[in-house]
Image (cartoon, rainbow, N blue to C red; front, side, top):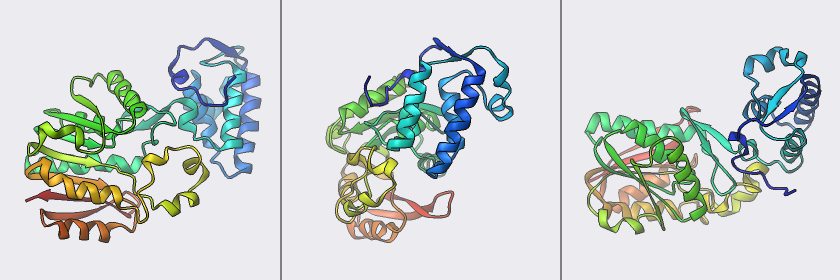
Length: 309
């Protein structure tokens, strides 16, 4: 049996059963193990909800203890083994169950893609608000470095009159993004391209209404200081932004004016503390105006938006 999480098992039909008493005892022990290594014990219930038919209330009340049979989607031994990966190897819970909640979606994820974060949801809202104000709600929009497809799919729902073009260097990531688009019924709205940033979109030069990206922005030397869930398991291709963390952002700043139409919208996510540097890059380029820094829900400077002149 492989030590790697198996993508997709979390959405398979329930085929296995375990008694409520056994599952209750396991839950108590798993919560204790989580607390011992400073993992939030509520992860245990999220894990069980993803892999069984138990809901939040049943778990909170412990009412499932009296049941003779509880349907789970994998053998109980496999459920135990996966949780041990969480405890012993700090594998992210989203990889262990194969899904990550994001906006109103449940997206398939694997170690081939960055786990979509709640703060990134704000990028879609920033784009939606720009459309309400400036009328960019039609035409072509681009998600650079799409990963799981989260931003592209969020844009497709928020901007229903647009066509979304999603680009990624990783073919494994694109397979997951396409599957997510298929599951959400958005394959006709989102087109996928393998390549580096704008390179596959030569045919759209000068016509793009907006471009969004959550690019790699962690300085190389800082990756080893990230929490083990990130540095050991998430793809470094999606994290490493070069010596100062700005290599990819710098490239997007330089190339976007060739692809965006006049007045086209530009926005990226960045690391807290990079706002001044990104703003300077945009100003020095000379092709942008209406440059704005946006805060995330924690009050940190997390996004920058602008328009091409």
